[in-house]
Every structure is written in structure tokens, then in C-alpha cells.
Image (spheres, rainbow, N blue to C red):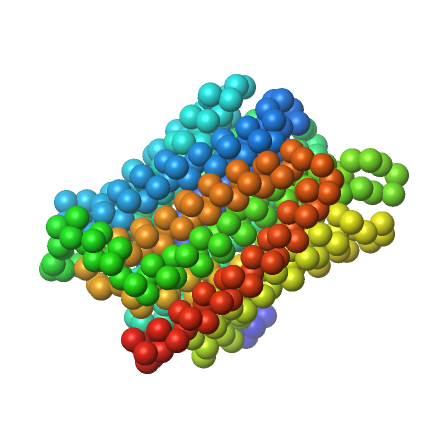
Length: 420
């Protein structure tokens, strides 16, 4: 047993201990998020009584405040007066408050407020936490380091989905999920406060805020990447917001008109999270020899196949659970390939003094994607069976656009950065 443990430890990349502490803290934070991730839309539609469109707009509104949070988060992370650590602490405090508001929401305005606060807190979080990883790693370590941080995120999310599903199945207490979410953010605040020192180099020159943003938004390669990254983040948001409603309200079973039960949803999304966790680091290592755009092309192909499998799940008369597992399994591979490659690509483009700003631009793609996905997906799930089914076909066809942009981006990067 000791031999196997040692072999596993030797297999892991040798990273700064603070990266491992951050991974552990992120796992705890994402544990609470996993409790609400796939059940919030179902709860507010089927129990609180909001329409799917209203819930989609509410969830999507988090991306609006997230835009402000990401802009400030990137700026604060690069600022000598702020830095990475204080930005992470502020993010955790605001996210804790947001989860408390959602735990007591009974009307759309309060639901909207909770999502706006959550979006702002999450917006502050991503540029600063990604910058910490970049600060503590060398260029040849970053792809695996980002894979491990995402593994920590997914491990926490997966465990949260399992425990949240068990809590719902046993008690039906949906509101308790948001209380757990608040506690997890508070724990992450303590971890950062006690264990993560500031990682920004105090000798690093810092250009004026406006100049840094002008440089980032004038970077042609970065802007081309942004267009395709918005598509990827839209795919992720559709899976987290529209897909649970599709599985609940449109996928028929042999004896019922309704879709999958909460216990079945827990099984499906636990399968997705578990496979993402298991494959995250092996996929990152196996694909590390390819350019980042080519890795993203492979991810896009997997997303397209996954969407088609979801369409089959809703239109076939037999084996819906197996088709759903195949679709989510393919999406897990797509996610595992996408997340570390995307962050590594942005760090390749970013000057050291503007890591926070460049990562904020990357994170803004998530804000836009998580506005577009829930809004459009929520509308589609409010329509007829035919439109809800067709939504996944259209999503699959959009992958063709993503692949075309990525091929062009790959050519540009090979000329500008011969070694990616």
C-alpha cells in the first residue's frame, strides 16, 4: 500500500506547497457550489414557482454583475495597493452573503439580488486565483497546475452534487443547500486568510489601470481567442442550467410523462463530475504536446458529440439513462480538455505585469457565456418539446464555428509564439 501511495505522489507534478493549499481551499469552496449547481433552477422553477425564463434571467444576471467583478478583480489583482490575496478575501465575503440571500429568497427580486451578489463575488475570484497559480509555477508546469486546480474544483463540485442530491432525496430541503454553500465560502475565506500570503511580486512594475486594459483589448490574438471562449463557456452554462431542466421536464421514461427523478439527476451529474476528476490530469498530460488551440479543437468536437447524445436522450424511446450517461461522459472529456488549456493559453499571451488583467478578460468570457447560456437555454426550456430538443442540435452545429476560429487562432499563435 505504501508503495502505491509513493508511486502516486511521484506521479503528481512537483508544485509549490501554496498551490496545494489553494487547491484544497478551492475544493472546499466548490463543495458548497456543488450543493446548488444542478438543483437551483429546479427548486426555483418547480417549488418556488418562478418561470423557467425568469430563473434563466436571474441566473444569467449573475454574469452582468460578474462583468464588473471581473474587471475590478483583474485590476485589483495587479494593483500594488490590493494584490491577489485581499481580492480573494473580498470575493469570499461577498459570495458568502450571496448564498445567504439565496437561502431565504421567495420572490424574483430577492432571487435576482442573490444572483447579482454571487456573480460579483465570483467575478472578483477568478482573475485573482488564476493569477496566484501563474505566480507560483513555471511555464512548463502551468498546464498541469491548472489541471490540478480544476481537478480540485471538480472534486469539490462532484462531492457537493452527490451530497446535495442525497440531502434532497432524504429531506427535500432545497434551502439547506444554500446554507451549506454559504458555509463553504466562509471556510475558503479562513483558508486564504490563514495560509495564502500575497504572491504578486512587489518589484513588478504596474502600468496605470486604463493603459493595462487598453493593451489587453488591443491584443488581436487575445480578442480572437475571446470570441471562441465565449462559445465554450456558453456550452458549460447550458449544461449546468438548461440540461437539468431538460432532463427533468422533457425526457420521458417508460411509465411516466415527467423526466428523470432527483436521484437519477444526482447519479448523472455525479458521473459527469467523477469522470472529469479522474481524467483531468491524465488528459492534460497527454495533450500537453499539442498547441493550446488544437487541444481546444478536440474539446469542441467532444462538446458537439455530447450535444447530439443529449438530443438522442430526449428523442429516443429506449435507453434514455444510458444515452444521458454517454452525453455527460463526453462532456466531461470536453471539460477536462478545455479548462487548463484555456488558462495556459492566456498566460502565454499575458505580460507578467498584466496577468490579472489578461485573466480578467478570459474570465469575462465566462460572464458573457453564463449570461447567454442560461437566458437562451431557459427560454428554450419554456417552449415546446420540439424546440427544447432542437436546442441541442443547434448547440452541436455551433461547434463548427468554434473549430473554424480555433484553426485560424492556431496559425496566428504559431507565427507569434513558436513554442506554446
